Length: 178
Image 1 (tube, rainbow, N blue to C red):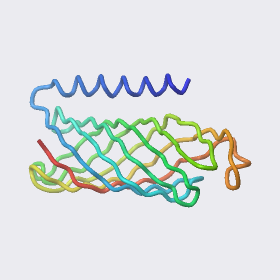
Image 2 (cartoon, one colour):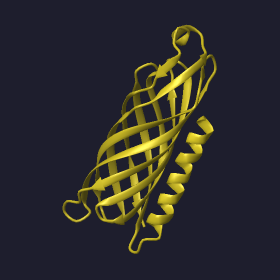
Image 3 (cartoon, one colour):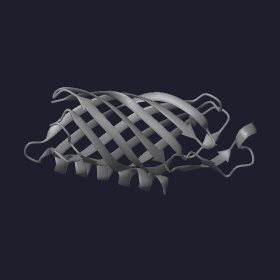
Image 4 (cartoon, rainbow, N blue to C red):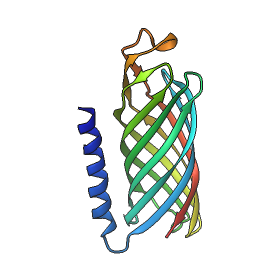
């Protein structure tokens, strides 16, 4: 069942990227970012990632993201593979671009004392890009909706059947436009 969800997410990302990339006048952006996540059961996590953004229209973007988050208090690593659809609101040309969007992802977990199942989650997001025509900074906030089944655990998770990974995330980074 989990494999089916993962394959479905991959197929959606590949199909959307193919459709978007073939549109005339597409802008491609590559970004690297630092991440902060405050999860209900996993506490605070830090990490980073990269994203590829296709923009077939000035007001529409499709992103693919891969990142790594480490939750130090519970010694859990999370590797999200995500896709997001954004509505852009360009101001002053492309110098300032506020945006809102939604996304879905498949989240892989690796931990020493906890066995968390990989699972699908989703998120709304809001952000701001600002910079020049070729290089920009961005910052965004999002709320992750994700619950991972706990198969076996010690200490913090021993009485839980699901780990509530819901929480606020903040990404900040640099974009390169081609």
